[in-house]
Amino acid sequence: MDDLLIRGGHVIDGTGAPGIDADVSVSSGRIVAVEHRSSRPAHRVIDARGQVVAPGLIDIHTHSDFTLPLNPRAESKIRQGVTLEVVGNCGFSAAPALPDRVAMLREYLAPSAPSLPFAETTFTEYVAGFPASSVNVILQIGHHTLRLMTAGMENRPLTSAETSTMEILLAEALAAGAWGLSSGLFTAPGCYADPAEIHALARVLRRHGAAYSSHIRDEADHVGDAVREAIEVAEATGVHVQIAHLKLSGVDNWGGARRLLGEIAAARARGLPVDCDAYPYDTATNPLRNLLPRWIVEGGIPAMLDRLGRAEARARIRADLAREGLTNFGRIPSWDVVRVAIAPNQPQDAGRTLGEIARRRRVDPLDAVCDFLIADRGATRILITSMSEKDVHEITGTPWVLVGSDANALATSGVTSQGKPHPRSYGTHARLLGTFVRDLGLLSLPTAIHKTTGASAAALGLVDRGLLRAGCWADVTVFDPARIADLATYDEPHQYSVGVSTVLVNGEVVLDGGDHTGTLPGRVLRRPPGTPLVDRRRLL
Image (tube, rainbow, N blue to C red; front, side, top):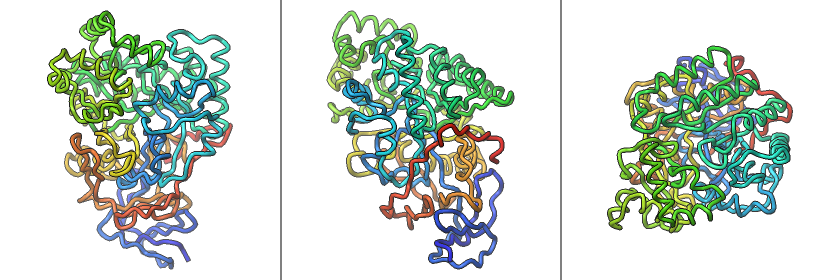
């Protein structure tokens, strides 16, 4: 007898094909049959009439490694139907943390992981100790973290000894099961690396059959060059490259989505293993310090705070921003489009814009920014509306662009309910299936599901997830296509999406009738050492 039968739903299997009315049988954690009218007996039957039965959604770009240890139930993601998160992105990872660098890593990651405890650890120990959660997890090692462990925040080329150390740490992480390396070339210390440094690390990835994902060097005025730099890694080394949260930031760059997508499509047409992901919002989030010129953080956070208090440094910042716009974000209409999300030492200002704060304090906006960073010890995280809605629709509406929230798994209570974070933590996938499919008609439902299931699994080289087929792991989402919607807003972000009734992770029911069961069946999926990633074109 099977463990579970999902009866009478409209099965959309993750391949992009139209759905069919069918029953899905589950046993021992896997799908054992997908049949039009199943006669297989089961211990439990879930009535899915009037609902879509789809593979569990894959959030291919997240930072939930900073929150799952604090709240492993992953409510904000599970309630959207997400069953797998890829973490350790943008060059940020909580491991390895060498004995004399733990404090530096904690300080560096404060805007992203303000409540996460840090301790000395190897990546092997980190993987072994990663807590059970309600979602499956793929871990990556971050290039920022590798740089911090070798050269700190120094703006210079690495020595041969430092390069060797980085390569050894990377190889150790890959042997421990890390899926690959992520970079954040947009900010320090990752931005101090030249292409040769990244290519050297990519050759290590190639030897291990691992992958590379990148928050590229620029998403504003030089976004084309940054995309080409990422593509060149695939061209030169053969590793799979994932371009993170593709966007055009800054008013001077709006309207260029089709041209940018064309560059990536051309690389894919040449057979290069390149993918990209995006989130369906016109607003990004980042540490506030990353909007300022990159020289401001040279030498670390204490050095930055000292500079921000000096009149001559503020004058230089003001001149740089007038000439070039915000670093990595381009020109914005005003500081009123920059909103405080989380400020650990200034929590009363969460939700306020920097323009509003400047007016309340009756100071120049840049002085307000510098003063705020000093008072918050550099830990402020902000939201910035720097994209055009038209470009967002163009990018998200492209069938081969994958879906990554770039966000943490949160909850409406407890330690992860603090501040005013980006609503994408609660709404990315529901927004895709609701607003973008049902309301705007930018994608068909099978295509949208394919983007965030089968296509994402293929990009990751997963052969037994992302599809509803016999033999695949039973990661399953059941939702009402007429009701699924995101409710989280910028003013009230801590609101769960609606419309998902049932979620299975590895065959266990985590969401039952819309209620979280409290079960933690998720696993850390380790890439077997030395095993090449499967050719994504053979998976579908």
